[in-house]
Length: 315
Image 1 (cartoon, rainbow, N blue to C red):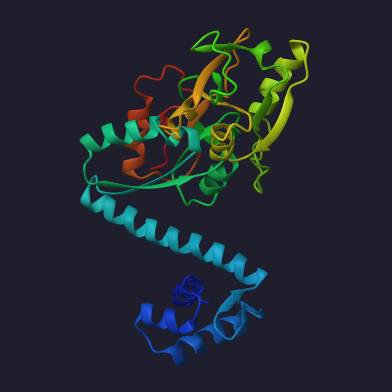
Image 2 (image 1 turned 45 degrees about the vertical axis):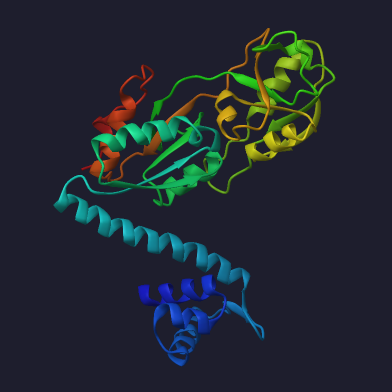
């Protein structure tokens, strides 16, 4: 199996038929069919279920497709990094981010960074913290923005600004007592929707999220929260809140995710509940491109809670 086989295979998957893949690859259909059969024979597995109009991936095929995409991405980034070394500050920065951070703060940072380095392109991946850490582990991205905690034996990090937990609600649930704040006890009996981090497949899996933080605070205040929804997708619970299903309990930066929705965001007080801190992270003991190093240095400016510095870069 070589890179050409992987390129042919991923193209067939994405096009759905060998004929469409052959057109995209600008080769004849019979040789492409032969290459696919050779790949299946070499691996000793069936990659597709053959149907009249389309090919359907088997479970083995799905695994190979995901790995093949990662391999192709790594090869592409390797060539980009080598070119970057010879050309200076050009190239692509691959960065992953939790969804709430990607709505406002990251775009602001990238806009300012691009003013100094206009020739840099960006590849941005979104997901929950476990997904971002897995992308780092697989070297699909160089930098990630996640919620703490992380494994400090594996990652370097710069802790970013703290943010409080807020209640996002429609006017149906707004008590109107205070336009900016809502007391925790005011949430008693209200239908609440929480973020629950999905359990990841990597060793970095962390499950605690807003449901744990706020539920514990409610219990300490003497009442059991009324939970109507738990989701790993922050957009889902904000959308449901906008449809008056309940009140979404989210980090403050989530207010930038669905602008013009009409949702009311109120910081929870008595007590104030802080979200798990976010951090810019990268793998220890791996090569970082010049672009990534500059971006880390840029992020370090103005953040007093720098837990790990650029002295750990690998040249």
